[in-house]
Length: 261
Image (cartoon, rainbow, N blue to C red; front, side, top):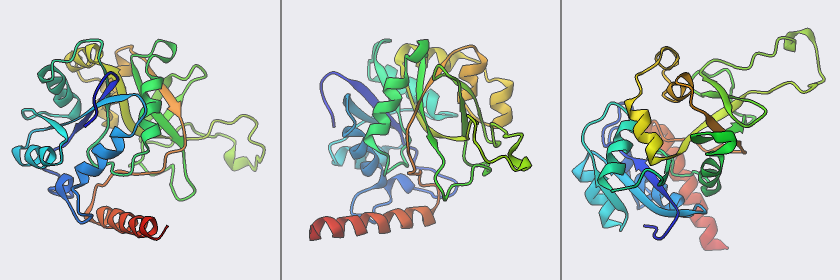
């Protein structure tokens, strides 16, 4: 899926999942979840190739049956190291641009993928990612939603599960924003050159990374830069069977609307 020059989308897809085993192959829409992710990715501007990286022969066989490129990897402690092996197996050069999206994001906006690629290189950044304002039904205090703090040059200052930045005067009845920075939700999509991915794979884990359980903090703690594109993005990954069922209902509802239009 995808051909020619352009960025390579790599999608790590494990068959195992603690809260939803086998979710990447869940097929109540008539297509496996991973198919939806890969199809959305292929629509992003500037994408030349979409590849699913998996440690499962079963996942690989299903993916290939839909004419989606796949690469088999070994066991890995995290998605980043899996992608490092995948890029080597694919023979990608150090200058090749990779966009990493998760295998459980069936509704990701293709423009969001493009935004991450554009943010890479901003102010000399080695990594690109995306942050979004919070929607009305999203709780910035929820520790399961990662927050991004972004500087004036578009570079990430910090990522946290805590509610940051803290509005000191919010409890004093102050109503005028006066330039107050509002929390931004981090969208877990990354763009980088293969050369940096290989560098990252050699970096030791860092104290803030281990404290917050956020891999991207390793980049900042070792002195590298992350460019952040800010755009509205309110889709979410599928972590539970309940979230998957909600996605299936939305998908069939849209399919019915498309047939009626």
